[in-house]
Length: 431
Image (cartoon, rainbow, N blue to C red):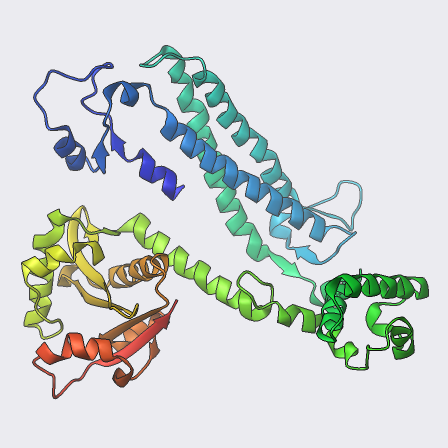
């Protein structure tokens, strides 16, 4: 949806009916004054284009597809056949026939609403496909479907956010279910490979052992060692540790894996993204050249307080691509910069807010936005030197020592008036 909004951020004003306007206006300046990123480059396209509506509908339709699949999984895991999940009464209703049954109403509604949003997407495509360029009255059909689809998607996202905390995992039952079905057969095959057996042969041997276990009505880990060795003599009693459920789970530590350690990292990345997205959707954006004077004013203010090193206007203009700004009522009230050293280390610096903007969470939003920008650039470690370590500690920065930061020492410490009496604390954040 954010990517779609970037493409939507183009002003058609000044395109006239289809061929532009005779009025002497600066369309780019007018677009910027109205808050658009740019003005449209082609007047005919601006009038006849509905790509932005299709982009939004596509984002909503894709999002609904994912919600529908999530709903289907939840419905199954709450069913009597699985029983791994339980629902609270807030998101379910009783059956009119079976007193013991809970109906997953909310998730069934999510599934059902998906067809409605997909229908609106397809309807606009059909409306547009035969139209000549420029405006046609058929295009009035774009609004009802678009607005209803976005409203439905927004409602469904809110429903999902409400519903997920109302689910609980029946841990003991889920663990029992996970141990069934010979899901540890892959671990057995890998074990055989570790004994020097080619995977093709290990695959065949594992299949034979699974059949043996099925015939005996046992899980793999309960087969006797003699049964294992009857199929392959290289199998020893160390195989039982490999066949334990948590062994296979904990081994899947690669990026995207399901080991608890890998999931913890994935959750951290998701939370970082969410914080950056929230910042971008509220008050924080990439700095522009038109912001330079305000940034200079902010840095000069905090340099006078002894909190920042002074920066001249030329330096700020040259580094404007690394700055983010925070706004209130379209006025720049804060800034921060991401500086990348030649080793790939990055530093968040020049963080400051005007006094009237403090206490509103804008500092945290600026830091979150820059951390996400650092990740998109492929940066793995970000540092900060500060006199308010508690603030960065709340944002999950960890204490480090300045002696580990030779780049920083060489770059700024030589020009700092407190060079020989430094009271800044070093913190780092691993992305």
